[in-house]
Image (cartoon, rainbow, N blue to C red):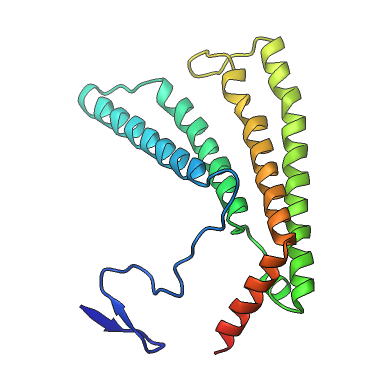
Amino acid sequence: MTTPNESGPLLDAASPLPPDIEATDEPTKVPLAIEDWLTVIIMGALALITFANVLVRYFTDSSFAWTEEFSVFLMIMLALVAGSAAVARDRHIRIEYFSEGGSMARRKRLAQFGALMIAILFTLIGALSIRMVWDDYRFEETTPGIGLPAWWYSMWLPIVSFAIALRAVGLMIRRGRKEYAAEQSRNDKGDAS
């Protein structure tokens, strides 16, 4: 069954988005499926932990002590992994008035500049957080909830930060290629028609 779209063409009722809106990922050297699967795994773990805690609270009037600590850690990891996916897919926040206006060369330079700034930011975060992990390890800090070594949680911040920085460098390289400029000009011609 098809339904008319505001712009005219008919859509398949089972299709969630019109064909011109459905985005395809750019080819990357490191598959984007890594972030996608990590997101699925983290969300599944969060759902299972929360559901188990709800059941335990309902039936026993007590709760698992470790669930809040793990949930907070998983939510932070989810934000970082989703940030990595957003950078790799060039879906980070920007002001479209500036990023989509002007000549093709200007857009290309702005896209590269944005990716460079993201790479610098997350490289700094990664480098500075290494000291935090070392301090957690050296002073044998433990978590307040269940007393695990704090570095078990904090060691992931530099790892994922450097991964985001590498994704930003990859985006900057892809935006510097001639194919990007040709693709953008084709998209602009398609938008005008």
